[in-house]
Image (cartoon, rainbow, N blue to C red; front, side, top):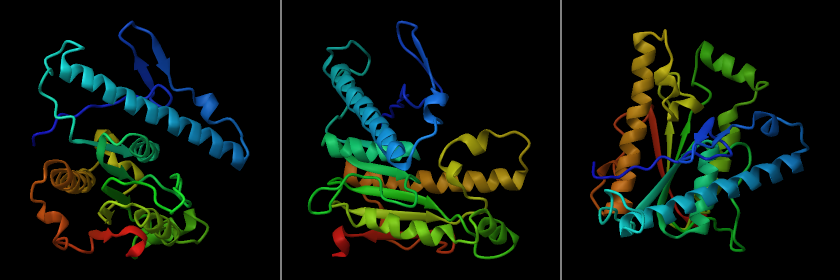
Length: 260
């Protein structure tokens, strides 16, 4: 599709990272699971968001070295660093948002199911957060009906988690100065992990389960590519302008800054 994709392993959050000199870091589970007050938890998480955002900026610096030839590689003269997008899932979505605030070399962002019951992106005095265009994905956590809906409600003390999370997503989307698209997926068995490869790697799944999980992945890929095509390559992206083929499965909303 015309993109160079760079994967980043953050030493603070990845299961393991092996450096060129053979040093290794492993995920510090005991540090992350240590009991904390809500204030301590917020401070700890923000410190790690900032640390991981610094990782992304470091990677951008290294890419500039690869492109210029300062760091010898086959990528010399082949990277268009005027058109860099960034994508993150879960905690990584918070990292992406922070990196965009810190470095305008990042021109567009995709955030995959990253916000819980409160908004966790730093605001400017005018209430804005990001200048860059953003696409935000989220799953429907409470099905419309059936036994799955009952289970989902019971797991959350009878509360509809979607009703709690939707206003938080809207608040964030309307804080973005660039174009902001919200994509909510209601494919069967959709979950937080559906925006990663993990569900596709599980053994013992039925053919129907595999098909449903692949469907969620295909939708995510399609909208992500359309978004980056428009805002990085200035290419046509009709998916972003037209209603979804199946509105019960996909809800697409374009938000404007402060609802203007």
